[in-house]
Image (tube, rainbow, N blue to C red; front, side):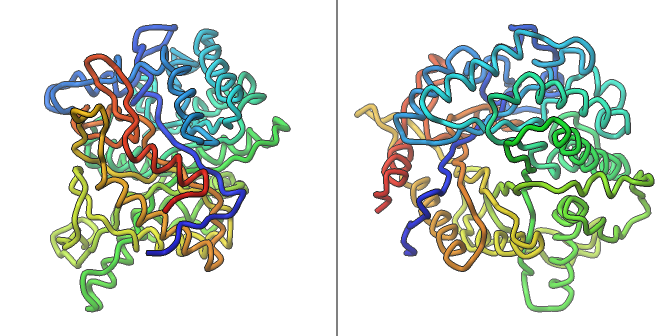
Length: 439
C-alpha cells in the first residue's frame, strides 16, 4: 500500500452540515427550510425522519469541538443555515443565529481549530422555494443578501469560505430526479437551477472580494468523472457525456470555460454578463468523493448513458469502493483548473456500526476505505497535484438526507436515543494519522 505520507502543512479537517447535525429546528429564531417541508411528505425520507433534533450540535457544540481537538483535527467544516440567519429568506437578520455561529467559531479557535464555513449546504428557506427557489433568477439576489450578512457578521471569525456545496445535488437531485428537497421532477427546471446556482456562486465571490476579507474562498463540487464500461467508442462517448452533464456543467463556467454543449431542447437562462460573473477567480476547489461508477451507452436514457454494474465491494449506501477513481478525479480537476489548490472536502464510508460490549465501535471496513483513499491522495501529491487538505466525512453519524438516520458515515457514533457520542476506531485512526503515525 502507498505510504500515508503528507506534507507538514497538509490540513486535516472533518466536516458536517447544518441540517444534518444542528437540530434545534424550532429554537433560536430559525425559520423553516425546504428540508423541513420535504421530510413531512410521506415516503420522501426514510421512516418519516427529519432534522428537528439530529445530533443536537446546536446545544452540544462545546462537547463536539473538545472531541475534535482531542483527536487532533485542525479544521472544522460546518455550514451556515440560511433560515437561521435570515428566517424570512431576506430582510431581518436573526441575532440569535449570528450569535450561535460566532460562539461556534470562538470555541473552535479556543482549541486552535480553524473554521471553514460553507454558505449553502442545501437548507434553502421555504419562503424562497415558495417563489420558485433556484429555478427563478430572484434567488441570486436573495443569496447575495444572505452571504453579505454572513461576511459582515462572521467575517472576522471564519478562516475559510465555501460558497455552495455540491451544486449537482442541489439541482439534479432537487429539481430533476426529485429525490432531494424540494422534490421537483423537471429537466427544464433543473437546468434553470444549474445556471442560477452557478451564478449565485459567482455573485457571492464578487461580493466577498469587495469586503476586504482575506480568508480564502472557493466552491465544493461532487464531480462525476466515470469510466467507460468498455473500450467501445459508444461507451467512451457515454463517459464523456456523463462528465459533461454532471461535472463540466458546473466546473467549466466557474473556471472561465463556459458551458458545455447540452444535447437537449432545454436552454439555460443565460443573460449578458452572466458567464463573466460566474467566472470570478476563486482561491481553491473542494472535491467531495465517495465512489466512481462505470457508464455505458443507453439509447433509452435522456442523455444516452446510464450507470453499469460494478464488481467492487460497496458501502452501506451501495456505492462501489473505487479509490482509483479519486486519483483520476483529482488529476482531472488539477489539469482543467490549471493547478488551483484542491481540498478533499468530503470523503467517507457508510457502515453498519454498532457499539460493542466493550463500549467501542470497531469499524474496520471504514478504516480500510479511508486508508485506500488517503493513499490515493498521498500518491497524487507526489505526482504534482496541488492537494492541500482532507476533510473526513462525517465527524458525527447524522441525518443522511432522504435516508434519514439509517446510514452512518460518522467517525463518531451517535446514539440517537440518548445523543451519546462514542468515537469509533476510525476516529483513533485519524488521531494517529494526524500525529504522524498512520501505519
